[in-house]
Amino acid sequence: MSRFARHLPPLETLVTFEAVGRNASFTRAATELCLTQSAVSKQIRALELSLKTELFERQARGVKLTASGASLFVEVSTQLEALLRSVSRLRAGRDANTITVQCTHAVAQFWLFPRLLAFNKQHPDITVSIHANNDMDESSVAEHDFGILYGAGHWSSLAAVSLFAEMVYPIVSRRLELPVVKELAQLAELPLIQLDASEWNCIDWRDWFHHFGLDYSAPPGALGFNQLTLMFSAVQQGMGVGLGWDFMASQLVAQGELLRVGEWAFRTGQADFLVHPRHKRLSASGQLFRDWLVAQAAE
Picture 1 (cartoon, helix red, strand yellow):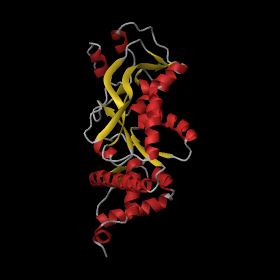
Picture 2 (cartoon, rainbow, N blue to C red):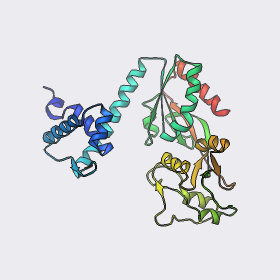
Picture 3 (cartoon, rainbow, N blue to C red):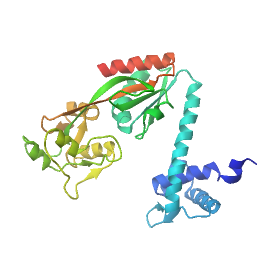
Picture 4 (cartoon, one colour):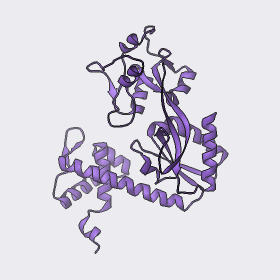
């Protein structure tokens, strides 16, 4: 028996553990895994017996990771993601007509996916697989054919071409009535939806106002989110004024679903770039996709 089989729990118990930990619920994990709740409970119990430690605290609504469970979850989720990327890369490598693209959730949902619909119609023989990851960086791009990476465009291991520049302005749902805003101080008094960008490279309201020379601090109890897509959804629901990244908001503004608040726009000098590893030669399909997407961005 190999050392892995002798010392590691069965892989299916770790997959189940990751799903329960991420969902904080046996029920939601069971639905995701297409298992019964009883089967999920048995796998978690088997894992706990194997490790001789409790991984979850059972609560009235859902479950909560114990200290040991939280520590294990970080390791398991990281390693499963790495394994998934490796398997996806190997599968894609066998098919010259399959392309993998890594980008953030916001870019995938609001910018890339709508364009892929048009690409698929024009090139039905080429499959483009999106891998959304908010923690992507220069090193993780190497595991895919392409990445859409935010920054200044300087990465030693990557070839890069600009897709769209970063421009950020206040937005609000047309359903939310606001007073006329002519001064930045008036804007600061509105119900601003906060974005907690402390763990990733992104501006927030404090940065945005500072660019225009105004000091700003979020008031106590202000509504806030730690993900750009969640904040954007809250704006769409009429919950307040949010920061609008042009690549997400411009179409809805043009359609009248969202309104810009004032004429201020922060052009940060940063951009999102289509990147790929310098050492990796693009396939014919990859070159076609690259040229097509760059042309789409130019339009």
